[in-house]
Image (tube, rainbow, N blue to C red; front, top):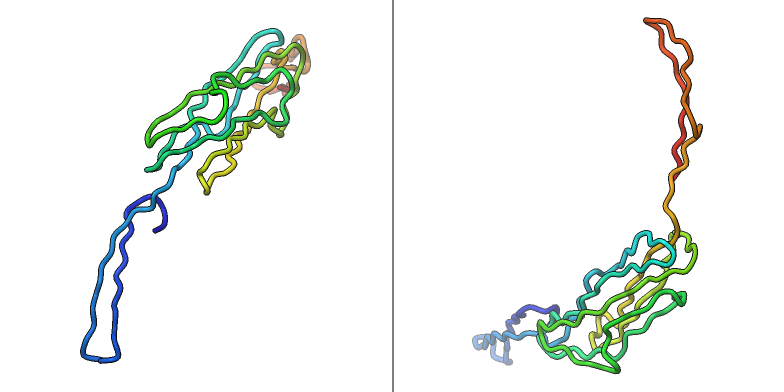
Length: 173
């Protein structure tokens, strides 16, 4: 069987006699745990220094047999990122059961926004197709700001009726 749904196969058995054959139809369903993580990418956005930001992550078994989660670990993370609500040690989720964990970001200074994840959550389980499952965590710390150039007044001076004037304004985030 393949996938998570019902599978069917038809076998035709043909002996040495060409006038005799037997057709056998078989049905089955693969028994497998299926790890589903929502969201599969965590975006914490901007958090001001000395404030706390966070998101919930739902780990669910969408398969038809027990899912054993051996470990949930934080990788490549600064000490201002943590995972909460994870059970101590391995745990098992029956089909359609879920476990909610949290990721917490409590910066004490500036953390720039980059294209690289701030941290990764590595989930090791008995789901052969998704093992390990890595959830990237993105975020930044600081005071979001907008820079406008010129920073004061955009002066058009005197423009006669029927004429136009142009000035440049640059906005940087």
